[in-house]
Image: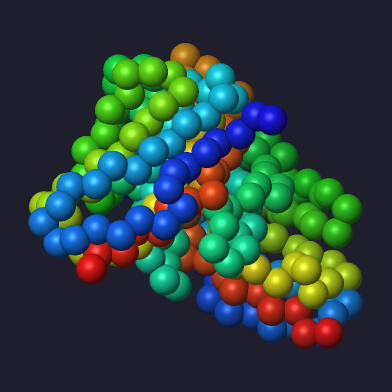
Length: 112
Length: 117
């Protein structure tokens, strides 16, 4: 089955700096890679996703890059703000209605 | 408003009791999922259902049971056979069923925190 590894487990940055979270996956059949943000005591919220036919996707301060050859994808947050503080999860899946495989999460703290 | 609701938000159970967690969605999604989240860990899949009256075990199905009698509902029962049930339980849904391909996004409910006393 698929195995998703996520690094780092914790990350602290100064407000205004950039944050990068990296994930690797093992199954070359995976073709969909979402990123979720989870605030304390709440369910995860989808913030950005990328499909295997795209190398990069950007949405305002958030971007995701995908390297299919190396089987890794990364979340980039620029100009970080205190409200970006949360736990971020990456995931990988293939097809639809199929199982998602999640990374173990990155706790991001943005220091004002 | 369209979305996923889970109830209750907090649930306390005595050892040896079965308990059922509710998950309802009005997004007209075919697929629904149950995850368990433990502190400092990722989401682990318990069960998922791609279509009504069908469901599959995930990675940690032992001690849990589900039903999918209606498209909008996917209740999870935590049985007394689950040795360590205290956790945060998350329900999710996605648009795609087994015949679709393009719509993978999973949307999550607010979660139920189960504590065994």
